[in-house]
Image 1 (cartoon, rainbow, N blue to C red):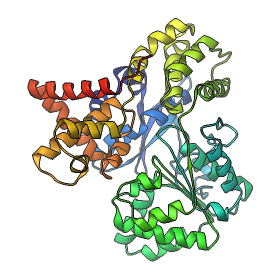
Image 2: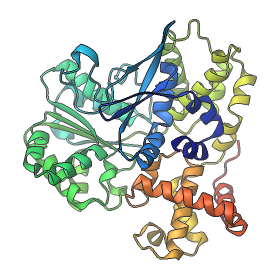
Image 3: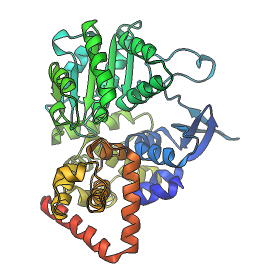
Image 4: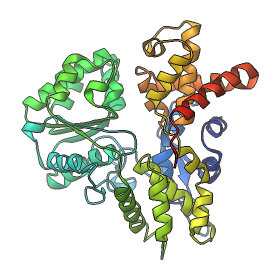
Length: 452
């Protein structure tokens, strides 16, 4: 069921190249391991599709088991999986050892020395390095914001990794905002709120990714404000990331917004051509051990850096597509091959449509205000346009399901899944409805189209 739904939601080429090669390799301790054929595939899926896979899995798995990505290790007799613990702790004899960093995946690959620095991110990189060395009283909390795929998570995890190397006894915790919410709610339900507060407020360094997830969650925001104040007063460092600046996050408590703006707010801007080119060169150097003699011609790298400008994450995803369609099939890497493999992506990148553009355009198309579209009202004349806007956000942007939900006033990713399924069904069943959605889509892409 998950595969069928995923096949409808992602690019068919991505489904054929990456998803069909996954295998379910373990089911133990409340976790299900998905095995990829190699580390290259695992990393690409983790960066580009894992959020969507997890969202669908949670929808269809009655036991709500956690997914983790693995690498299949082949020998002459059987296939075994090397399962990575979601906390980053080792398996086997050392499994009972406490993880170096609370929660999150392995942090080994997220370092400052492999973060490619340029004019668009150098301030955030420098301040992140400073935060890793110890509390920066004038810049606390450090708030890093920017669009998806620009390196915010890399920096936060690099801070955690470096902080533990620099001071092994330092109490460090990396959490997503969703982790924070879930842990807080679980503590309340189990009458353990005092223990939760004590544990979090005793940290030396707290890093929270995607803090915009707290939008609309009043009780959790209030708890976080108290936690933030307590940590700063005790001399601990707090580092946060979001896809927008504090002033742009709707439904944020005024006190929380004030505290966030009271530290240092750093923006990571989209990468320019030279930085994109450097990112590609850096990744190819990292792949040298995996692909013996890997050599990507300069014209191919120039083509990639020029045509895929949305984010470094998508740039590296495009590189992966080229490698999977050439050397992994025993074919040479040429400019003609790269242009053919990325033809769909290049066409798509000529049109730049954001979730905000879609919300504004959809509201105007149906004669609504943007406030109506994002509201909690459930009348049909508002619900259907809202679902269409979510559907188009999934079709026309690279935002993940949780990210789209957050941009619709903090809604859950399951609401987005339901909207996409509903609109797909209505398009199949009602030609007039399909024409209206297509008309809106064309109007959005025409309005925001860019000539090459």
